[in-house]
Length: 275
Ligand code: HEM
Image 1 (tube, rainbow, N blue to C red):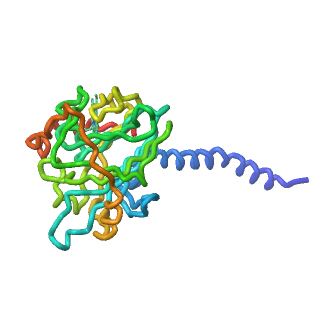
Image 2: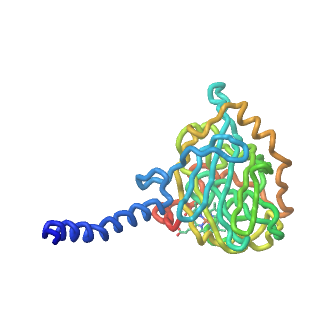
Image 3: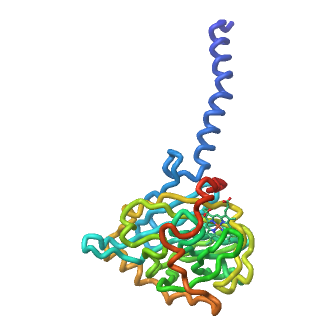
């Protein structure tokens, strides 16, 4: 016959099971947060781009599945900050539909934005630069001294996922929202992900719907995103021809694009955490 002590300890163990399960569930739920830093701050982390092997800093939202990574050439020693970077957008699609994008600041209105989505046939990626004047309308396509040159080796799309790797030439500048000189520190950038089909997907002027999956700011550790110039050049050399804007694209308005541009007076607290 078993002792009372045995049953007592058995009871204790069984009664601990729900507590242990609760603890495990909480730990898993904690992971399901777009919080790489683990301290309530959305921050980029080291990431090696699989197709090219280039080390990058990547913001990744575990809930949304959205990722945006960057690598910059380490030219600071020469006092010659680069206005170009290698970027990679990765995000889920819903039956081929949806779009993802980044902002050079934590805001939507004012800074240089880029959005990408699958073309009409679902066989390639279309990207375009945008500048939002408000939060109500589809941000118009803009042109300027910046260009995106796709890196085919790191670009792929299917019905459920899009990967777009590109050389962003001339994409950093004071009037654009993030100056090349400031890209040596940790800066706030923004991201957005929508799941609805864009209007007229074959055109870079496609109409984007609201980013219903998530959006917000994140801390980009650009000081850690620097790679030796030779590594940068090796990957930049893989880039193809610049993406051509659609006929109706308008010039980027640098007066609205730099620091202090755009209306951020009422939206500081509105960053949505539904990422
Ligand atoms: C590349 C495209 C886009 C990017 C990168 C982007 C990014 C962002 C970011 C970072 C925010 C939060 C900061 C802020 O309030 O300024 C935001 C807010 C907002 N965006 Fe966008 N966005 C894009 C396109 C769009 C489009 C196409 C729409 C709708 C047609 C839209 C509607 C809004 C609205 C309504 C808010 C404010 C929501 C709130 O404060 O609760 N955005 N966006």
